[in-house]
Image 1 (cartoon, each protein chain N blue to C red):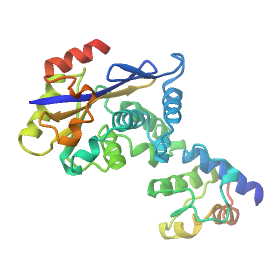
Image 2 (image 1 turned 45 degrees about the horizontal axis):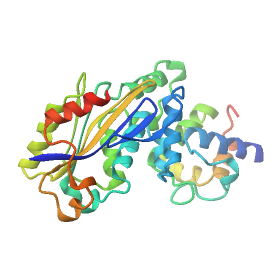
Image 3 (image 1 turned 90 degrees about the horizontal axis):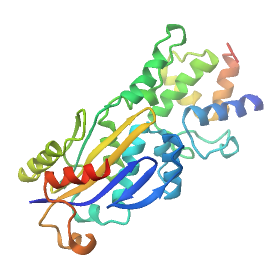
Image 4 (image 1 turned 180 degrees about the vertical axis):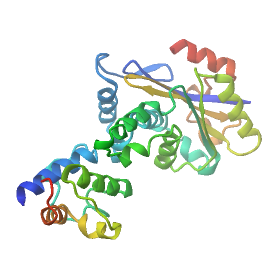
Length: 219
Length: 86
């Protein structure tokens, strides 16, 4: 059996951890101001954050929120942790920005720093680089959050002994519209040191049905 | 030259998204890479684009980049020697 031990939601200029509001900003703030404000609020120190596109910024912040004050990364070898993400807009937000830099042949200056983000799985790379995660990863693009697909894919990785735990979920950005729902999913036979970390020593979800209900409660 | 150096610092901060850094934080003679600003290979490409976009200077031989982008001052000297737009 697999379980979800922690989750984070970032939307409507709010950050919620395991159902508890952790940070809130003025709803009228544009996404970019909100996310920079949250980064500074938590005193994260990762200069590359400012160079990332908006999608990667959101994925980075979500993963930081999941992993700060948590022993998850210490409980598994780096190659036993996977990252499985999904979204709807793929990298379209930054694709459009890149396209604008190449649309005028008399003013043709494509930015390398923009171009490198024109794939959605780059956000997985940013999380893996930041946290030195070396396990399997996958990026799915679908119209809406698909708990069955993500759950089954993670369980397939677990059963084939590819990884023992994953960071998974939904990270989507298009213009000022954004949402992140990230969670840690682990095999239920948790390492001993991990068991002591889990709040109330209990899990949050243990099936894709529960995951779906959790998502629907917040979205 | 000092005006150009200051302008370059501002452009580098903007183009390379060096948040929380001011022109005063950048030493004109310090190496841009390997220390200080912590620039990477993508930043190097951005600097090449910056020279072309803002100063009309195209670097024909990539090997020249190491010398040109050693510091803000070497960039300013190169721009002055190859001044087209500035």
